[in-house]
Length: 109
Image 1 (cartoon, helix red, strand yellow):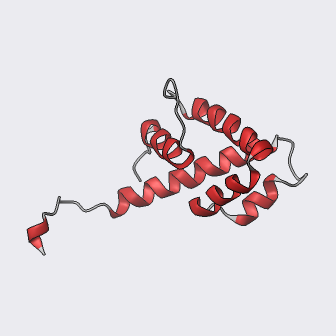
Image 2 (cartoon, rainbow, N blue to C red):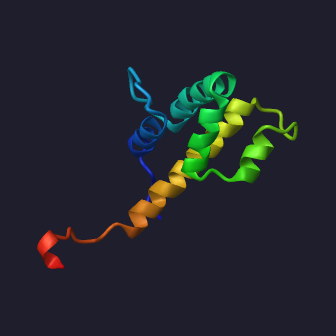
């Protein structure tokens, strides 16, 4: 299994949330911090829109329920940010596994 690069995760998060980051995070922990701040804002100010994004990203509903429950000691935004990153990793891994080995040309069909 190939390692997912931080730039790939950052690009996916930036695209999904339409972010304009002044500087790209250099580690997964930095990306988690940035994402946790975005999630906190969205939960507080744009919850319905945020839930639509989670639905489109296909974040598991049980994970979302757990995040909004009292079954953990972490803030909701951190739990959700971690769940989003895990989902992004799975999507990136799937893309890597099913990417064509050889570039195909239109005329190959």
